[in-house]
Length: 83
Image 1 (cartoon, rainbow, N blue to C red):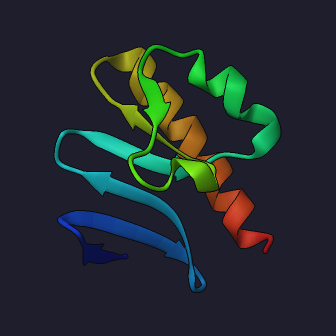
Image 2 (cartoon, rainbow, N blue to C red; image 1 turned 45 degrees about the horizontal axis):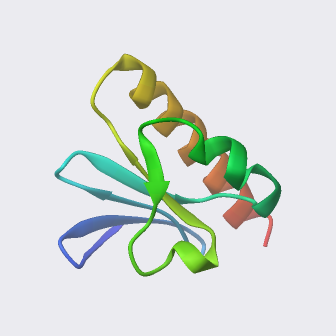
């Protein structure tokens, strides 16, 4: 874990799998096959600047969006760990 750009950065090895900021929101990498489905959730949007590389941001505002964030952080971790 480190701090960059006013966000907390989480890594597995030397690969980033999540950025968390104080809004509260979390930015994670999502596999291409899942992006469209994940973007259908109202709390998920394309991440600024890095969305083109498969990164999405979840704004946490209630229990449902928190659960989405937990799930996507877990998936992003597994995606980064296997590379």
